[in-house]
Image 1: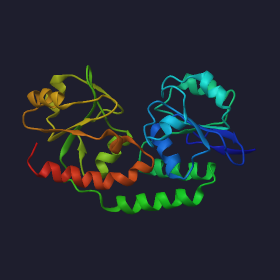
Image 2: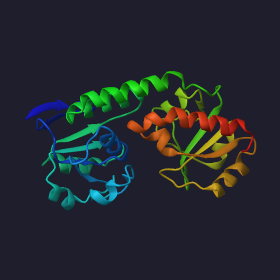
Image 3: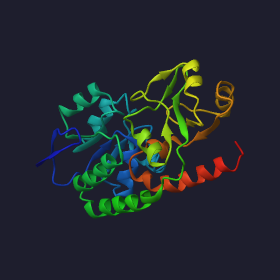
Image 4: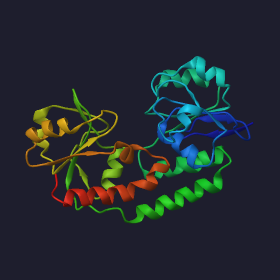
Length: 263
């Protein structure tokens, strides 16, 4: 056994090599796969959709906010990986009584890269984790392709909710060369009148957690007739694992689409 510290600076007692891992976070599940782990991962959530084949080969332990504790107990994990924001505190504290639980806490790219490195160390995949970090850093060295357009990034409807300051999404928007027009922190609720007053150049309707569709684009267009409103892939802006490798290419395609005047 050895003691490591998670991103909340909490001590976690773990085995020298974890052989039965449960992941409670979709983006970190995908990362475990890309680190080259397979047999070691025994449980994932119903929202862990990447890689697709794991959904039929791994035990589903409920959702990110509602764990099936009996399913987790049956797996006898020697490491559980969660996240402060995506999981619920009571459930995490319950699991901590019986298992080593490592929690990530991510607000920016530096936090995400640190998480990748730490999980590489925890799972004996240090070299592969280092390669992923280097690849992400290289690709992110030139992604500021927008020119200061003001963007409203919506994540929910009824009520409207946006990604504000001090979020990982805000970091991704800023690194893209965009300006988040929401000055409140975290995920504030917005009325239609407030949205109108914000008067953004662009409105991004995220594919998650709310499944925005084209009908919602029309609804926003009535409130903001001068803004370009489009559907965006929420995984690209909010998943902080190995999916970061795909973000720069997605950003270029998004910029091309916006500049094509199709919207």
